[in-house]
Image (cartoon, rainbow, N blue to C red; front, side, top):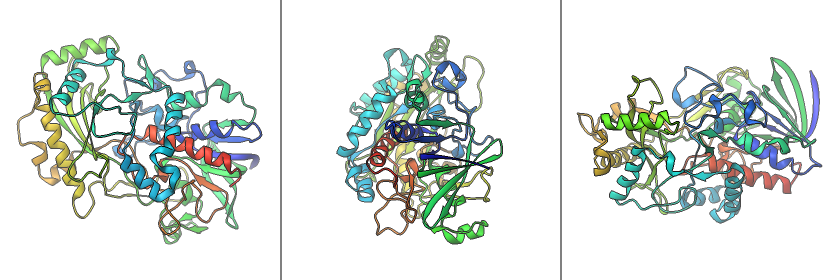
Length: 498
């Protein structure tokens, strides 16, 4: 077993990890090592698989698991989820920041986060959807939103409910992911930055309330990295799993898994939040199929380009709790005959109150954790009520004058009136998990980290990714996580070594 020493080791090369490695290595006097379990395709887009850079699809080549429930989907590649998602970037509400500020302090306020949001937008090269990428369905969806009284809003900024187009990290159908944006050729030429691809973080070695090293494995061969500061950025599933394997988590649960507890933190792996939803299918007209086929032949067919953020009666003040997505294009799952397409409207709960968990199946890094999203599990049934409200809104979209000429509602009862069991059977996910290493004040016994990502009970360990968010933003999580990583990297730069 060999050992290497750095000032900072970042464990996880996803969206947050790319930001952290880039920003922390700007200080040339600080050596930084970024560890990623999946492949590192380098700074040149020409070295990446073409399918991975296709912004019109959801790539499935570089992922942790295959043939698993859809909520388990997660990228295993440098750049993480930015390599496998829909390239959408939206921002949450003032209510989100109120929740985060109560948990982490003033640096999490909307005003304090704004410079980091803007920095992420610039570095990722985010842009508005160009007019040529709007299909006839997307244009009709915009008209439907206006018809139903939804105001036009900027999806990349804080603001009220309304409709609009998301910011995107793609140009002419090519995805521009976090690795290409933050680990470009100039960044990688820094002599103080090391990127280790195909290297799985096994466990942290703790002694006396400090991390003394981290064991990583490449091709099954263990290697110990040592640093002054260790930053976990393995995502809402991977970060708690790494802490648990290292003996940081609920002591009783760790003992049951055969792991000696080092730090008893009951919140590790708890508080999993994701955004469930239901797709309302429609029947496309032959004219819509033909128009979509023409767009696909031109290489300009995108399934989703229009978003509505809507507020149910349960929405927080100064916020919203639903995303309504009219979509039309090739099906995400399954297949249709050539020239035929899928159309419909989805309703996603973006502020659910249900909470799930992530737990270990074993102490080994090669076995995936047990992930239970616990969708619609709140005992008061609030999430189910919000889902029905969203489906009623989706049905109004489908019945609008702008859309009903392109696709028809199928026969049968309205989706929002279906029995609970049938709605549960049709649940999907928005793929925005957060919360499993949640931050909180010192008075919160379930909090895992403080407002700067410091892990309780371990002096030189931080977590800095979606897992620290105590509540999910009313948004797609890529842009918020980019901004969070920018902010936490700045905090670490101001307090090196702790």
